[in-house]
Length: 215
Image (cartoon, rainbow, N blue to C red):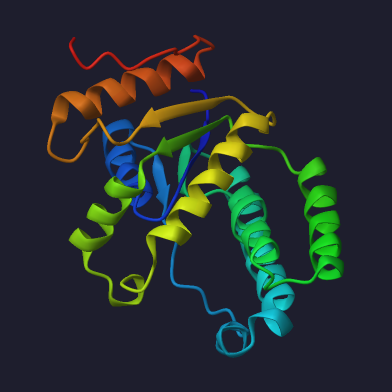
């Protein structure tokens, strides 16, 4: 039996954890859900982002790289909530853009990231959940996490721009983009069936150009 390593990417509230859980049950793959980090720099980071952003992001990258390596070594198929690439391509880059990471620190961080990912085997497939800010906001409110209440639409919009730019240039492995605005794989079993079908097609080398909701 072929072993697959699948990673689910997307903005805050796009549905990564939900899809990871549902697909793991449907396909009998081991799920790896993003947990609460024990980052020792977080308190300092929120007190002084410019001073501690580099330290915090290096910790996140080290932790994510270790998880990625562990998943590669699993004997059976696995599906991961959030990729190793998003810490650098989205969140560290956004810290730099907003002035919370210096140019020197960002250049050093990015050099380390590029060097490590150049030799790290990629997943077999990245699933990108593409969602509008309205959809993200609605789902963030539905799940009611207190620490997410202060996330602004401006911040979500900026992250969406970074996600789209990253996906446009990402070439380490195949990507399947799922239009999360129009697919409700929680409430609609047919939508989950469709997503599962497209994932398996993409894994088997078929080009997936659209999601036909009228089938």
